[in-house]
Length: 321
Image (cartoon, rainbow, N blue to C red; front, side, top):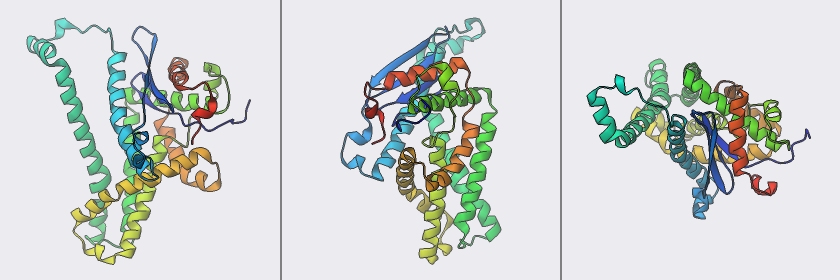
């Protein structure tokens, strides 16, 4: 069967030695353990947007989905890291007395603290790289004048920074392997959408660039932020004399709207394959050449295990509504 039978609503996330898949009724986490076995854990979960009708409204649901993916994604990432190192013996001989004391008394607490600090630093880095730095660089050229095309130049710089950053981190051995799991996630979903049996051989033949990927969502958000901020400058010329920190604050305030519109487009792209979708999805699909890598068969097996765990008995239940 070569023809696509349906567009599934199932989505996933690449983890450390694992894949998380989220279906209409639950979430599955599959991790390759140090022993070589694949451990799959299924949890019945209810999306945040389904807990309240207001949260499911168009535009609002995009903001909610983004926040949910940040919170739950981090939790699953930490869980996969723990499972993938489960049973590995620490080299006690090389640990100092102080290290052992800290590990015995503050092990779990220390991990929580380090996780929180990492999250804060991550948000700070994202703010500096994608909000402050583009504005600063354009101001150097325009001499602090917010010109008509200022947002366009900021957006182009933001794209260059984003692509450069992803290229650099993709060279890291650990991240490269996560990107291989990302490829397995996409290939597994494509295999199911094409109506093929979920086998390693069938999954291996599939493409790894999917229009509903988070990478595509990030690019759509950048393009939308350029359009919305440009419209603000054209409609309210007085912004050109505004303090730069206020300008950055305005960009932060329109982010929820950008997320909402971007989410609706990604949903639309998942159900349609017209010219508009192809044009707007093209940058994100190209970027997936970096954020996804061809997986090995053992990695594909993990993607298949996770996907099978979230699929319902009726394929129509898994389709995008």
